[in-house]
Amino acid sequence: MSYFEEVLKIIHQAKPLGCRVMPDGTQLIGHVPHVAPEAFLHQVFPPLTAGEINELEALLGRPLPQEFSEFLGLANGCHLFVATLSIFGRRKNY
Image (cartoon, rainbow, N blue to C red; front, side, top):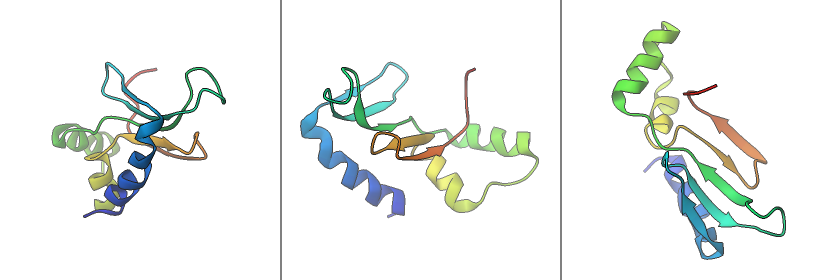
């Protein structure tokens, strides 16, 4: 089990506060309306496919570190604890 899978176990403890899955697959976990009407403690973006990770490596011209590649296979980034900790993945839109 990866370290990020352990993190997911922890943040999923906030599900009783409310959660939502957006059309693009982004998971919003831990609704905190006292912060803002649509605020959530955690956002986890949908994972990249193996093909998308390979495309990213080709674009960069080098392989990604194994740990980061594995992370992208679980989540293409996340904002945890109301974005106190953010890990960015591949941006798909501008």
